[in-house]
Length: 220
Image (cartoon, rainbow, N blue to C red; front, side, top):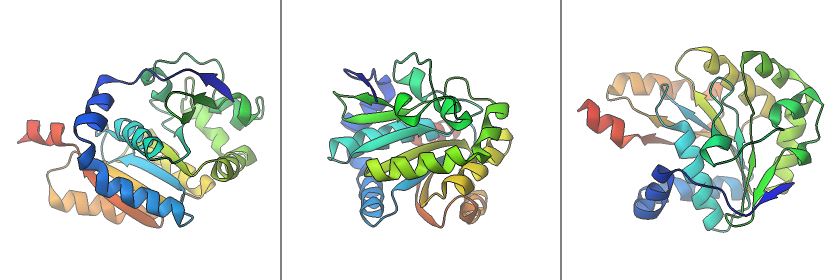
């Protein structure tokens, strides 16, 4: 693993995990309980672009690590990879190289000593790079991370249409996700129920749906 002293957290994540941590308590308990029960590979998906899947992945990872769980974040958002940049990192080796077989997994995982948290980033992503998910290295990645960490959180991006939806489903299949968490900016209960009903395409277990209050408040 590569090591850094600490990640540089986005202001919104610091605010949410410091002043609004109680809002995550029920979900965090469910996620940690799932991991303890053997469902440690968990996808985080948004029900639309900009619904907050990446922010939720970061917040859950930070809180889980603070609770004593060895945790790794995986950037699976090939159409808009941003975990590394949002944590203040410039990386020259990412999951793309692991999936192609060019780089060992251990050479692409970055560990933050100060945060007790690890990251497997994407450099540039792209739909062409996502085709490598079909390789044996994707399932090997899942197996190795599951073995070394209590909790593996994968940012799946938006699953509400567009190229990332197909990528997220392919990831879910190849990695064999144990469970998923959704974040929503939907005010239409019927549409939200429709999306939630499609969860089995990602994982067998839905641990919760998180409302993006900022977007919902603006919509109201």
